[in-house]
Length: 155
Image (cartoon, rainbow, N blue to C red; front, side, top):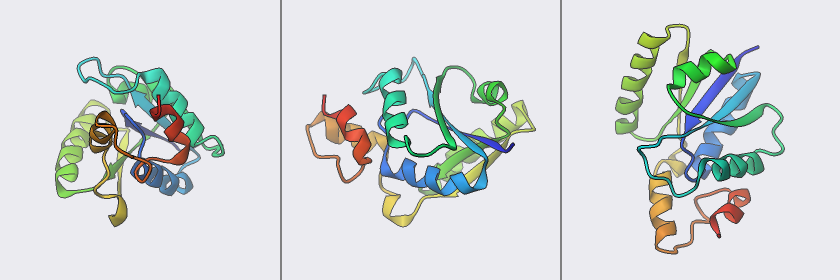
């Protein structure tokens, strides 16, 4: 069984995340969305809410599982049996950052391959950071997040 992990903070999930995930489903038997818990990074939504939000967004996709994790991503890959790690690339700077992480992960665990999926041009400007900023100032983010996620953001 080919299992992949798509790790991230998903704070909040965006349409760009959804696009990458939908495009990766055909490549793997199972895709696990790993909601990373990073105690040094302040978040808008707690990990439990982010997990529930992602489960609502992908409720109709049987090949996707959602769970939270803490610690090294390669350790979590081992724990869940994922041999692949999916990463979305929006810009050249994303590529440089993700390449460095992929090389470090490979040094830690050579059996785990990083798979980069390029964002569609219409999604390349959407980031969770920008969406969080819009939310902080009470702006409308409905163009940038999936409809199923909105109920978790309107609290």
